[in-house]
Length: 397
Image 1 (cartoon, rainbow, N blue to C red):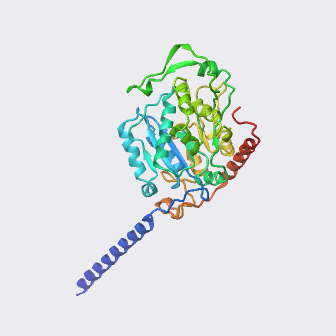
Image 2 (image 1 turned 45 degrees about the horizontal axis):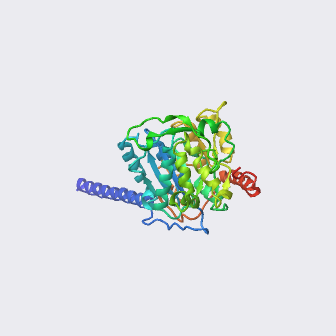
Image 3 (image 1 turned 60 degrees about the horizontal axis):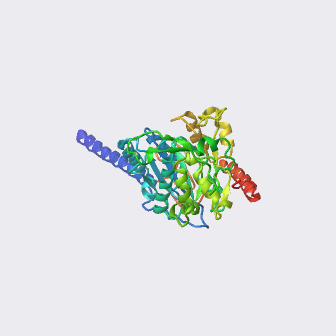
């Protein structure tokens, strides 16, 4: 009788313990699951601005592009990811799988991966062609964003999207942040007068640009401007460039098709020759960059020794970084407060922060912002730039 009683009690305790374990896991699953429906994204001048990001890279950049996406993601924004044709189809499929693994991305459906990639060459017109194509796609798939921001796999943000949207909420939405000058200097004879052909535009296999034997005079039908290829452009200006109600963008595109580094002059020349847009140029690319002395073709690779000056700079983004450089982990930890393989927490994230759950796997109102300390530095930088813009001392000159 005692043995049967012990057996009965053991069965009862086992069943109770199993029920308790199932209840615990059920509670954890319910707590960690996202809301069944995403918060409604409100758009318009009465709501925070939204950004259209074009994130691009080449062979071996799948993980870097995904990390960059996590660092700049917000449900209000739109994203287009592009691995150039030299990357394998397996890399593109892997990138798509990584994107789909993010709960918020699946719910809000605001990230796309280019399926038919373009060819990118370091020089020539193929780069500006892919940027224009990306902008055209983003204009087609989403009508609510305010600014277009291209970033390469070697770039990284220095502030959260809540910081960026908070500061840009007080900025006129027709303004364009583009470093530019008409003082061509040595570039006139070495960058703009040589005639080049970029095979990346029309050949299936990779090939370097080749030079014509003669040069051409600098055109007098329009004024040529140059500057940083890294820009933050308004939706209205990109519609002007792409939708084609004026011949100016097409005329300049024909000229810049045969320029060595067209991305250093195309948008700059279009905007400064267009009467309706030339007064919307804020002369900055919003990037933190260090050039070697004398400057080479590419800027200095940033590392931990640059961290302090970088975060104090008031810039929105920095470049360029080597893959998985330790300074990126430091930016994640100290600036973005981002856990490994997780999104940057914002006011929209309502889940608890823990080792087993991403706080951004649950969300509340995506139209509210919670700026952090970096917003103050960025706001000071933007205020100074807008003061220069208001004085009209540095526009299209």
